[in-house]
Length: 553
Image (cartoon, rainbow, N blue to C red; front, top):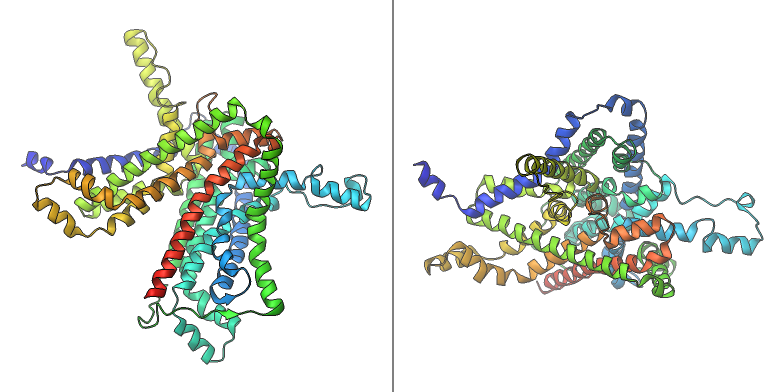
């Protein structure tokens, strides 16, 4: 009886459960270490630095959430409901800051606005000032500066989701509001925005989680958040248990963000009349100063978040190309491309396994496994690095000790301190991205094709290889590209887990910029930005196709 039930279990089901269990390992390791430290310094942290870490983190999160909320909602409102010069470009151009990592834009603006930078130098030359005592210029390396940098690159989360929510709203609701005497502004606050509140809540939650994940910006600006505190306690105080305790606290913040997002969406369902749902939205044309203001509002975030940094990096890259194009840079670029490609391939392959197992054996168990496998995306990179390093180092040390005692040989580092550790972190971190794209593509294939293939004698693996994979090719390619770009930009986990003398473009830029050598790292930063344009272009193409389909209907 037991043997028969075991034989009926599909190998893909076992593999799916195993993948979900492996994804949980980093989180479990961090929590275990937090409650079982070698030296408990929690009381000391609570009396000294921890309140400052928490306060700074909360202020940064609230500031970034407020800034991105204003920019994202206002820009989405303008491009959806109004016609003004440049609107066609801004519909997708406002997504361009997606391509710029926060730490890169932080390096650029610091170089631009610091005392020796071109802006203050030009002001001193123009007004005849001799020193900083002769004038006031707001410092960039502050908590406010970090919040501004993060706002400039994270607002597209809210813009994209809010714009989609606005576009899906029924025009008849706005017509009814106007018929009742509400002007555009009143109709926006009383009808349009409340209907889009679930999408806005999701966007704000994603922005806050990305803010918690950031390390490069806050470290460069010397802003002591919980993410930076993990490294301070780990490397500065040489206390792994204390850093795990801060990491656990950071995980609690992430769970709070997820909970707030769920609460924001609760009981916020709005059903639209089927007759008018796909009726094209009639945009209101703006004239005179109103059109100029709308264009300026949409142009500012694109200019400050993408165009200006890209121009500055491009100038530096061209001017210092001979100094940057070295053997070390080429090797670093090759490392980054190779490990990102391997990470994308491994992540998508496992995502296909998870999604296909759930399709072959539908039920709550595999559905729960897929949700667990997606949890890594909400884990900050610093926490993930700690959670990967601890069990891997324990395994390496235990194996090495056993081999020494039994055979007098050393195994060295097999998992920790190797490229495998980085790949494992990438898979855990970006599984949700790949799994979402794969499930979407697989869901479009009718189950009748599976049944027809089975009647012809094909096994599940043959069906996947000969039918599903070819039909999912575009979705799989999209998933690989998006995960590839995310791996290229990932800094916190890569910085900790990379082997000695192994650099990626992200760590290369971080090291040079930390030494105030932005011009020498501009070529690497520009390559990261150029790679980041891939998902932006994919998003814009998807939006255009969706708009065309709605017009045809």
